Length: 419
View (tube, rainbow, N blue to C red):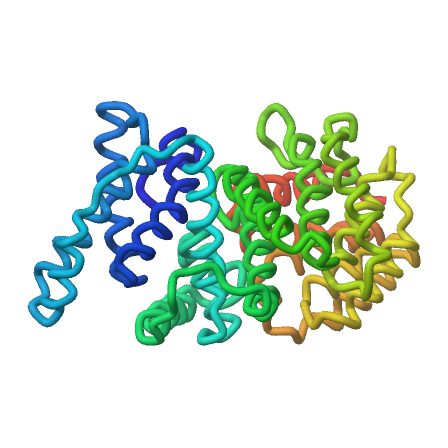
């Protein structure tokens, strides 16, 4: 996003502060597109100045002040907005040093309002999700395009149109009512789901995951859950994040190499986080109709409750994926269903299901289709075909640890004696 390696402390801090600062600037100036430009300029200024002089005592206030100055300059430069300029100049931007409690509440409020504003009914669901990932999650256009399985140029146009819709609609910057929140809930949950997924397995780069994104998604999900504590799907998504994130430390070895779920050292899983997720899921499932996030959370719970990989209750996972398939047209669900079917009924059955997904254009260039096929071919004993598909999958992923893992699997099979 702003030219520093993603693992530097300044980059992590700026990513955390961006939605808070953007929310504060929009609240003051009521112009989404211009506010985003001003915040971006403030972030660029921070990279240079903070790296040289150190992070200021109030970094959020520093960014807000710089962004507000940029906005004021922008307003002054446009004669067509003279009347608005006078109004804004009468309220000279300044940084208030609130109490710790007030500051925390203000930060949470601005982030929440920005989240729900980006998911306004004036936008199509796809545009709302894309805009929120950009504004609240801080993802690049390329990362969002990868999450949606569409070209980057298509996603750039979608985000641009969403910003224009926000600007022309005059959407107020305020927390929506309970009824309005219910209307926007599906888009909000999907946004946080995608942000978490991008953090858990990055679409590109040298690191398998981006902990800042997954932790931000969990933080935002906790806030949404606090607003709607009795909503089963809200709780279900929070549980899914907690149970999935609990495995993060075991997903790589000391060299940063990917470790598959079946090979992970489960003693490194976060037992406290698993216990929190299981307890919340147990309270949630009896509350009403079961939705897709609750089903995915239940699948994650089956994995997390198995002390050893061989103890995994694959028939139960297969049954849960069967229910999930009926609710969702997501090809990734079908691909995971094929894996579960292979674990229960053998690799031949799994390969039949994978063959049926070949015609789905949404998976045509996705590495997971080849990776799953390679794994099932290996289980079936067809090592030459498995090698080809491991290599094909490696060529389609931008995540270096994933690529190395897939190439390692191909090399391992190449070195094994033929049966």
